[in-house]
Length: 179
Image 1: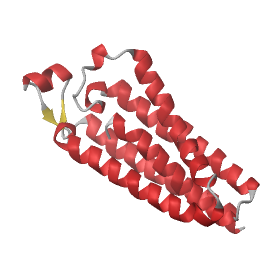
Image 2 (image 1 turned 45 degrees about the horizontal axis):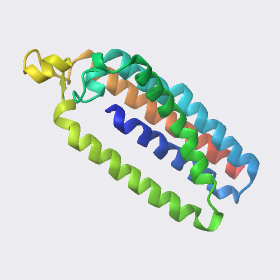
Image 3 (image 1 turned 90 degrees about the horizontal axis):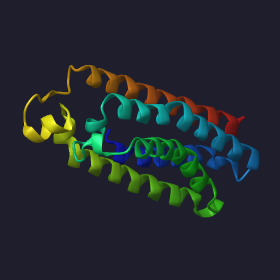
Image 4 (image 1 turned 120 degrees about the vertical axis):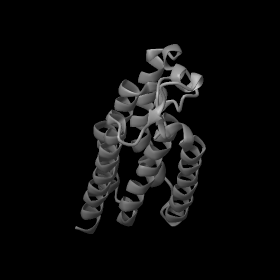
């Protein structure tokens, strides 16, 4: 995933977590639990995944649009913090709407975010299918396929962790709503 799509994924996860707590009929304890679990998901999973991409393959994570050597380290750090904060922000946004409109707004938000993430990934897919540095990609030398590379395997592992963590968090929120 390119770095541009990670905040959108965080907001998407937060909205899904808010929809899981939406059946609570505005019970503040359940909404607070959803917010805490969403923040934990962002802090323990999504944020470290973004940091991993920045640390291991900064040029790839920028989809070779910028030279990572010219991007200040502070910008990467702030981006990772923003990605981490997007999950509780999405949860708060999804749970702060009035109960009657919540389901409709959450579904619309989810649809918009899914479309945006798919559009970003589709637009950068040819760039994301290869592994190189910025100079190698621009000079068309030393470019190798992502599939079968250590980063490719790492992305599969990170994706499995994110999906599993999101499912676990969603289930923990729903379990509290129904019990």
